[in-house]
Length: 267
Image (tube, rainbow, N blue to C red):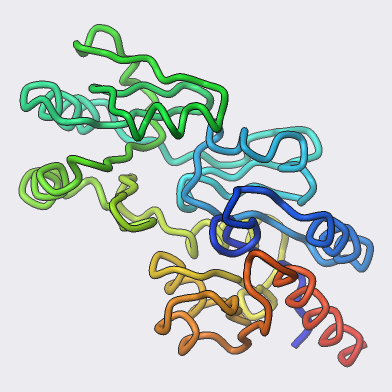
């Protein structure tokens, strides 16, 4: 089967542990695009999180952010899809965090707010070069178009509240000690599938690469699932191809080489 779209997770997959995208990865992505393979980053990251990559973030054709909820075309930065959380649901979650002195990250585009500051948040903010605004009331927050939330240190009570009171939301563990919170039905695979539909690409013509548990759905359902060498065991078991290299070396170059060889064999 000829692959026409490659969607790559970022952290732990396409980027190194220092959040950088290597020259070999950028060159391989350029080679893929010259051969007609559409490329996308698919990530739980929000727009503001992409700042760690600088201008290099635009080396692919598309961004699928917010765990699949937002699709951006890189050439003109046009938003093609954006599944936001409705106002009533957002207000209930934010009010719960404020009333119980819990840290909740509120993110929409480049807007980043937190209900409580922490040392770990400040450390991450130093990497981005952007410090989130600390808010103490609903009046300080635009609740009309929130793209998503995140919880770290206080994730347990927030997750329990969602389970108990907010069926409109879903969440997943994007890394140890962190949950991403989205509108129900949002997932990396649904984002990939939506982009494929926009491009007239069949599901079997897609490839998805990842490393962590939140990548399992897309690894299992894409036409070709790829796990990098540093992936957790269940992701490797679900993948059709496992790279010999990890995210700190040439995993992107290797996976693209594998797909391009597939393309040549089908031409």
